[in-house]
Length: 82
Image 1 (cartoon, rainbow, N blue to C red):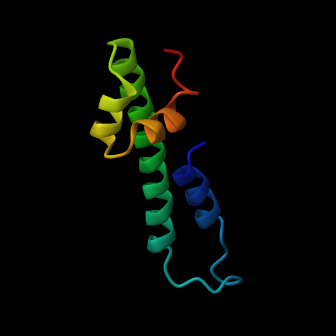
Image 2: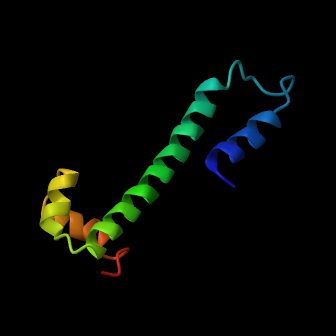
């Protein structure tokens, strides 16, 4: 279940008579952004893995990410089998 689905379930289950909740759009927006970030992180990891499979160095990947070679390797080496 995604963060958005969990938030929707929780927010839809609130009893407006028992809870002091005006609007929940801001909380729903947070959940949607959290889902988008998780999806983007997965896509980024896949892209780095593909780059490594194509023989790209950690230096070049770091440049693409705007970080050092070491930072790129520390972040993705464990997830990348190459």
